[in-house]
Length: 295
Image 1 (tube, one colour):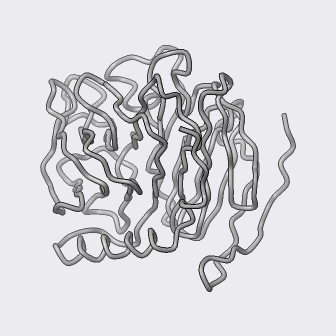
Image 2: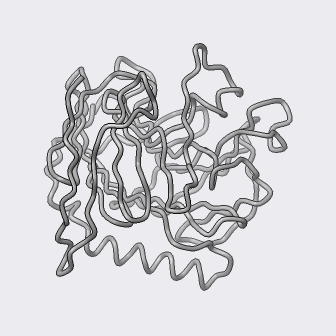
């Protein structure tokens, strides 16, 4: 096991100095290696051999992912454990599982005080995560042009599965309280550049923004872990970009994404507008444009 030093270095962001980002090893997923990235708004747990997050714990202590392994993942039961993760990029093919916790298709290194770079064992994929006090930026630097991918958040919204209290939205409108059922083809398919999701009982909202918009399908579906479907006691949301019906990834170009936990629920149209304005301010300051994608 590679020994990882604790890094705690203040970052210059725009004209301001951000609070420190701390990266260290953690035993949370033992025996699987995981790295803990601490910021002022969230703690991210990253599996370096998977290239994906197993936990995303906001500043209230709520875990939005709650991945755990399963010896034999099954549908839909594994919506309560092994299906969960972020960003879960590569589905099927020789690199299946790259970006998904529980797999071992990647190698990773800390390339800056607030930065992790992961490369697939095949050499076909490389991406970089940079962490800031209130968000993280994923830059896909190399993608297999012969194998489309998606970007998905799969986890329990605000730490629990309760579609009747969840809300969601895109830049086109929100908050929306409809409950698209993943099973039976009931997922909601749309075209968006920004998506967000939360729960009316929790004072935080998860958002994802795709830097460069496209016309590819994006989606949301709630997947319960048993036959009671939306009434199940556990499960997860499937939310993200580049996924169409039939579990088909559709993105081929290198993209960049911003993921963060916003400090408040989205209860009214004014909250929706405030979140979009916040994301616009993040985009204006973010360093995604400094990446050098290869294809």
